[in-house]
Image 1 (cartoon, rainbow, N blue to C red):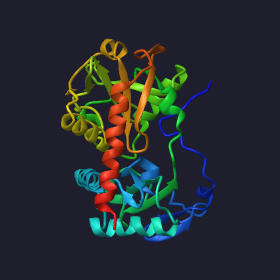
Image 2: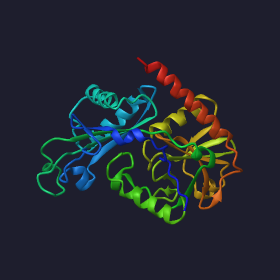
Image 3: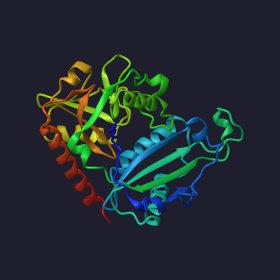
Length: 307
């Protein structure tokens, strides 16, 4: 089966020699390791952010840092440094790898190494583990031509009191199960419903549809508060494109004229089909307009933040 993901990237041989930041030290990827006693490995106890570098500028860094620090605060996870120091760590890693554009960064923070292999957070006593992993990473073009295939899966995005989707946590099993279910259904990615049966998000990205010129996305109650998701909503509002955050059913999603996903890595990725049913007639004028607006937003952002 020819399966794609929204994170498919062109192969880049430079990634074989990347340096990875671990608690202040830069390690070759072959030597970059954390303890088996680390809270992230043992329990998925940690938070992360995906960042994108365009022409030397980390796109929408303030938005990402707001989400990251808010998430860490909510679970009593001490970052161990302020935003300025964390930015310095990002830049140190970027310079060590001689990276300038088309770079994806996974910033990861766990509660650190435990003294014994049990759940209680108090057993993590040596401070957090901070990892900054950057790769040369350019999305493949074929996804924007062909689109991604989705399958509706039984795994749902849960209620906030079970595991709030606003946490970009290391505990991703819910989404991994959904991804496996989609793969077993012959699709590229999972379309996940919320606890009430309304369309919510995919296992890795936020989800939008276009119906009669209107852009629809979920209420946001059960999905990741995506930075790219919000930028698309803001762009629509600023450019006369009707946009609604609302509950809608799978019936309305399958009958849409267009559908697309949003995420830091892929920006906006078109959806070709849901449950084997083609979306629209293959033309995607609203999606194309939003993609163009987003590219212009990135250009303006880079120009405003370049040194």
